[in-house]
Length: 213
Length: 172
Image (tube, rainbow over all chains, first blue to last red):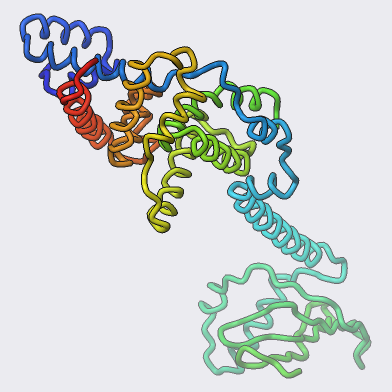
């Protein structure tokens, strides 16, 4: 340990460990000048401390004692004192509540959609009929297009059920969200033929992202 | 306020008062400083856990004294005179030595010498020598590095040594 003035001051102020104190004491045995230096500061410390001895006979002013005894933390102060923690806690609570509510509503909405009895999933054969028709209309028959079509579940609701002039049953259906390329398919009418196969009779669609109908 | 906290504060009160005396240099101002500091401690007293309550209280007293000093500088109040020191001595500090002339003289000399130190040196010295605070605690109370604490103590000791041990009134 390198003993300098700072270490000696720490020694005087009792800031060293027992082991360090022992080292300093051994050092002082061989360094008379520093020993005198230390003794002077010990003397000085004693002098200063004696000047500030607590007089137990001197009572603490009653107003100060009353201040402690009568101290009650008001509700305002409690809230004010806790504001450091309250603000982030409240904010977190609001955010979590909002998030939970939003997620819950979204889940409820999607559950409602799929669990609603008025909605059905479009069969693959009907989907193919529609896509084939669309390819014909656009004049670019390419079956790879709709074989790679990845909108798996297409929901629809039945708007009308009727028999056509041939006496075959027909359904007018409305799609919830059915898109193909840049086309939005809104409605379709399917009728069964004599062999009980589905035929696409009518298709209602628009191009772009918004429909006025 | 819980009884436990109240008791802790009441036990600490004499020490804080002594520190306040040391800072202000006289009893009346010391009691005022203590009272003001206590108001601040209680105002901010909360259920938040303060790790080192003692150090916190000393810090509040130190800061309250800094505020007082700013006011004193603004109003240009002159520092302590002998009369005030003697008054403090006779009334409140060394009651047992009331009639001892040498003790009284010593007391006045030491008090004057400490009060003549700059506020920074005095505060650091009192916390170390009188209040027995570690350098680490002082560093936290005064919000200064430990190195500064050590150099302030060293400097104030040099000054006091010259005045009280090596000076012309070297009668201790």
